[in-house]
Image (cartoon, rainbow, N blue to C red; front, side, top):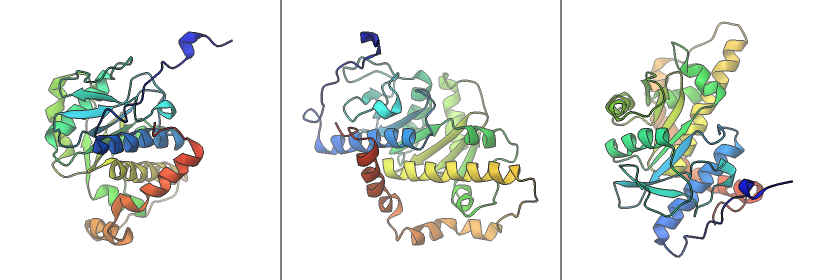
Length: 261
């Protein structure tokens, strides 16, 4: 028999309390959480995605700590400042490690509209390999064209780690491998951060499978990697993540409706 303690508290809609621009961002971010769950990248409640509020450099949205990702809605997302203070009424706390990582990136990178972090099995497995991401797949060339590495310093709870994390990410990279920990992507918006994580996860999955095959691996020519960003723009018709995001939202509408409430 279920008990009241298992039930989600009632979360009133914020749609009429925020600007249309903020609501659209909330819907996209809630969709990203649902998609992470749908793709099997979630780690119970222990990873996080954040999105900077439009026109507000020092405020961002992040998940209500304790909700499963398939339960998150646009209204349940929590607005916080750069000191970790909740700016909305919410029965849920904020993941302290999530706040440390995301506040560091948002504060340092003007282009960091969205930051997405995962702990997937294959992502962590590759992060533990000395060679990191290997140039052995078409997908890898896009990741390698903008990838940094950050050494593990324990659970990310200390402010003193922030400058090192930001320096390892670099001023323009969209991908960061957190050694012995997982993967992180930075996008100008939620769709871009999600698409980049899709590439990052795919690269790690391919690498683990290729290594498991036991044969000699064929590397991609470095000259091809150098032109990867131009090739990506061509293959997406200059639309970037905008090419795939509407279809992903339609998939959610079929498989995980309610994210936009």
